[in-house]
Length: 204
Image 1 (cartoon, rainbow, N blue to C red):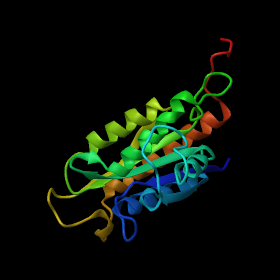
Image 2 (image 1 turned 180 degrees about the vertical axis):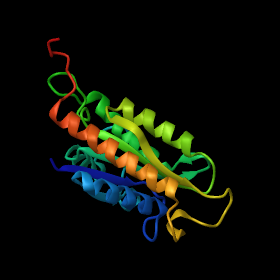
Image 3 (image 1 turned 45 degrees about the horizontal axis):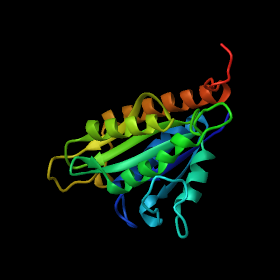
């Protein structure tokens, strides 16, 4: 069974090297042995309008991103840490996903039911657990499932100058976390693809 994953890179950089992208690329590589094909996009390159609807009108790029998201089995949401928080770009994506709360199928299930999410976090300050907790809660609220150990993160020295993208060797603890994220996320996605969550009209 081949699965599709979409990785959304929420770096603040429109172009150039991105530590968030490096972490996403490592997750994608870790997912490959489990028959998961990953594509990615850098949200800062798009015009994602503020709002909580699936389409905020002319010039809004979110509808095409939403389409790619719904065509995927797995969402990888990657963010840097800024001021101890997910990036503003990441928060914009979560705000737009709020629309899933009102978009349901004929059994009352959100369109994201059966889709699995994982999180990637990088930064040069403390806050990886706080940021992943915020993303976990938000993604779960809008219908995504999360497997055990569904985050891979790296945090450098506080106020340091070394970024994840600049490391010559990825620490073993990060590599091990990537492996857990990949196998657990792929496993849960395959289970849900063949055994959907019950809906309002499903008989016990």
